Length: 231
Ligand code: SAM
Image 1 (cartoon, rainbow, N blue to C red):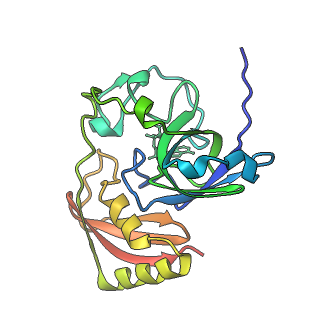
Image 2 (image 1 turned 60 degrees about the vertical axis):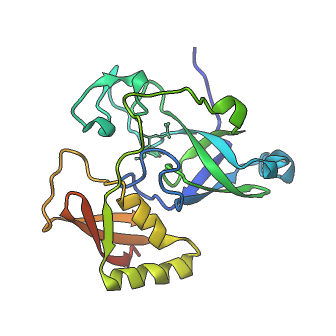
């Protein structure tokens, strides 16, 4: 059976590359984005009622997951990247169909545009559907997942003074919580588990129109070295 799906909109987010995007929603509350809805859903009618809802489910396409061979087992970063588990036991982006789902906070509702936060979606991600979060049905108080029992531990993030000043300036210009976004994303320890970088190794990540340079002082401590415009 072939199934054709049409996106109903697109995510515009700070995350212009995959590196350093939180691995699940809610981990970086300062990660905000806007869902731009396509016709005929770009009307007040299509979003009427959503102002009564605090969180929504986003169903979307991992449009940059690449199309490699289909694997039945994956090596999730959460398990250090060297332990294989069944694809259905993981939320890896390489899966039978490149479908993602995330619960995000709904900040603002306007015709054609939903502002959301706590996202883990790349800029340009096609959105297939949006559904209200229904606490009485979606919260499973007795649930467990022994593979991912708690949020990943956070590491320390510190700043060079000039980098912090540049991030504050960018925050004012963009109207976005840039300092908090960088703090929250880097505290997730974005490096692949197999990399054991020394302080001499410099990393860069693009957020909004900024290039954020940082290094690992130690494996549990990132220092932000500089913020420069990407253009
Ligand atoms: N919460 C979703 C889920 O469970 O289906 C996504 C989980 S997935 C592990 C999150 C990662 O997907 C992010 O850290 C980012 O690297 C990657 N990602 C986000 N949007 C993507 C996209 N449009 N295409 C490919 N990868 C994407």
